[in-house]
Image (cartoon, rainbow, N blue to C red; front, side, top):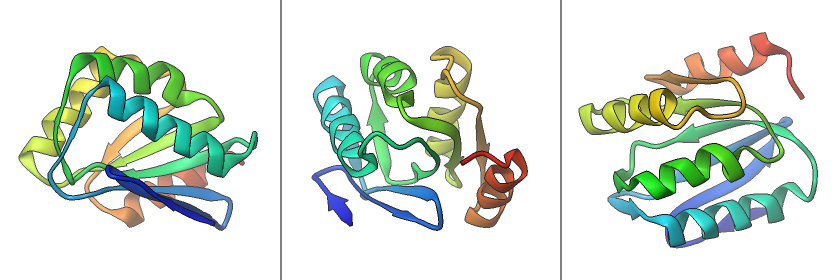
Length: 124
């Protein structure tokens, strides 16, 4: 199953949830609520580690960051954020430092590093 909304595409593969934000999206609280709603729908009550590509985010406000750090952590065991632009680096570091996600969360510059992190945690 794959879900696509105005903000992202998400699917489960090999016991990982892949979450890819679309290009040039702005995330406010309304968008964050929709994103979490769709993620919970695809997970159907099962917890997964999440590989989240945030490179497409153009802007995210504080309410959305805080919502994603709290409600967005439901049914997630760990998060690897993929960021390789100056803007996504700033956004991801602000998220990790200021919003205090409830699960282990780290920022990486490529998929392989993020996947390796999730595998080393041995979390399902």
